[in-house]
Image (tube, rainbow, N blue to C red; front, side, top):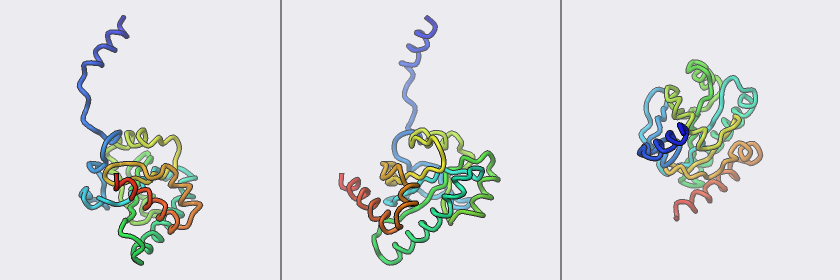
Length: 178
């Protein structure tokens, strides 16, 4: 009876506002160094959400590949391959903010990051993008959050940057045309 009463109470509770677990991603607390990134700075870009942690050996092996990919993707943009740009947003699974910052300084490219203080948001993103193990790299269309690829890690590891970008751009174009 108590369980049934609790169930009924849940039915009358109004729905909470959209969070990182649903809807557009434009309101996420994204930082460049210690400054908040304005949502329009990422608009129209392919955003790679990189779920990783300094304590994780597979992450430490994949991060250099992602860093090389990031610089290769930047070179592709410079050569005018397409106006769609790629940004990496680090979503840390580290146990302390200091661990995250040390990991970023020693191993990462000049990536953006989710504000470490927003642990609830990190958890919501993990749920939304079905992060069961790390590292995980999810390519999304910004700011809608539509998934371009759930297998970014495999694609970055197995394909050349140009091939990866071509595939992601095509998926993004199809989404943008809807």
